[in-house]
Image (cartoon, rainbow over all chains, first blue to last red; front, top):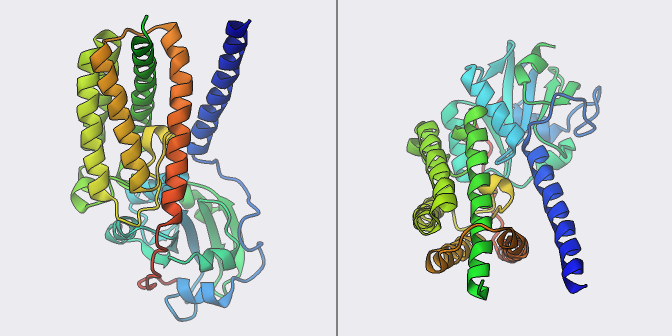
Length: 163
Length: 182
């Protein structure tokens, strides 16, 4: 009787562990490009603090693409690797590109800078909060006034920028 | 089968699973060409430059460890122990004291964000490997069932220590934002 109960308990534990592993695998897989609720709604303007940060303390000179990334996120790693491999570091599809990294470690910041990305380090997470970013990796197209014209959860920033 | 041999058999099944997951993670890094953005390999410009060869060598060593654990557990335990010691030194050398980034270890199944949890997990794994070397077990179905509570206990302990250690970690200072503009 005890053996039977232990056997069923083991089967339940195996099932839970298997589901856990599958969940991890799914979480590690980069998300396909899809619309997202994360971030300022399309048509709205980014807060002035966010605009100031991505414009390096001044006003936006042109439209551009903002990529929101975190360290260790599989989709972000894929996005950065693809941009690096395609040598589309500071612009994609003719649009200037800025990468906003949330709470980056020293090594992550250095790697982004060494690669040549125009980087905004959001160490406190304030910019993320103000821009309403809750998922990664998010790409956002903004016009020269800071208005969000489109956004998506995607690893393929190049085709997002050219769409 | 004695209690220690049974425990050794469970540890053997657990280590095979963990090294299998580690190999899977490295295979995925190579497939997606993201090795250069792995938290541990970003530690220095040198490791970043040699990220792909380093991951390839590490993957081959993981495969060798799994194969040996299956065919000759004491030899497999010896090579696995050396690998764990090497990975521990590499991870400690590349992480900072306020390290709060995921190490993506074992396909993120046995992940740690703090040095304390990383050391605890790896010392536990070394203890399991020492047990394998001492008891010379073979893989068995009963042992596989022992691996489940063993793995679960390790997973929960690591998570607990990680959360406790992360709670006592100082908040990283705010860095200046420079060099980026649209």
